[in-house]
Length: 478
Image 1 (cartoon, rainbow, N blue to C red):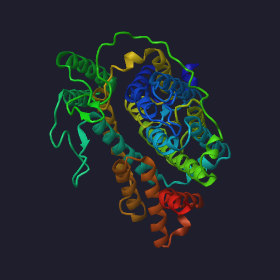
Image 2: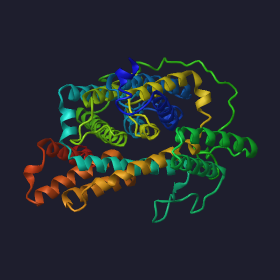
Image 3: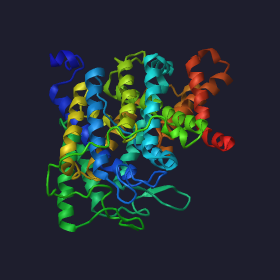
Image 4: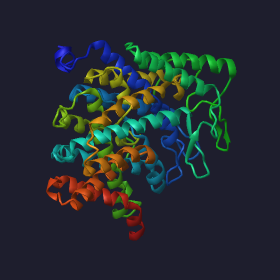
């Protein structure tokens, strides 16, 4: 029954591969349980209060528990309803925007109400077939470009989060190798160890290459921290330790199990924001979140389907309507849970790289998140430097699809190029997709091939122009 329901054999997989893939996906994105509380929990809202806390004390444990719970439930739902190897959790770009750009203007409950409202709108777009129709209106080769661009994007995420590539803070070059052009510290050695171990195991076609790499790199990290007492990268707001660990400091936890507190659930006010800001300003905020959420998922689903070999010759993905429906519910659940919009995670590609092809992998990932609500101390052992090598390896695997793009057709080649480079350069999937769509439309019109453009692609490109011009529009309406 399990094999029939998830179509494991039909998709050329096994239960073992699905379980490994699900665990690897969890390990590569488990950082969100620790990072989301730092983004949302340390920022005061317009009333001077912390999310889940009060005016003077944040409550990070509350946010961590809700983050893990909702990620677990929604990811399991994705596996059971859509049978797709895709995990979901609080979106990093969105939660930063919510904390800095929305909550600062109102209460946290009001801000989460806007997230719920956006999720409800996007759910309606799915139920009416609009979101699926837009997905199918995108030319197949642009979908490939999206997948390749995301491959470069997640590889850059891995390099930055590990500290191998860092921001310079000044000067003409925005990023550089390590600390001012030099690789320093034991964490980089752990990253390099994990990366070369995964590459070696991959070349040897060892099953579980990424999972083995993450586990052994974590063990090395714990040993290194025990021996040298390195500490975190950020010692204080004004003190940086360039040789420190990026997020979690690996160490043997004093306890493994901790009781979660889910009292943050339901912390939202659906329309409360409109008593704090103008209706037009509120609509623009919802539109910005919606467009980002809408096309981040389109890009992620496309990339995962391509990498897993689940997309047919016509660019169709099985159960795409169900995939998009669960993703839209994730936005609602994130806002209702008080921890920002939940969205599809491209880190799911690491599980696909490990062999995941069905929703069983998502069920495994979701169960791991649910366990995390009790096992948060254990998850905190895994540092960035042990998990991020998997993102670099998967970035390579996704990059190999670039050969199927027609580089002789400038109407495809230039938009594909812009899509691919702008995702990592702007640190945004949506920006890359938007630039690709707009440039494709412009070039086809210039070429006199306007009839080849799907009407929905014209509409979406126009919406992206509004998205790119949000700041001057805001300034214009005051």
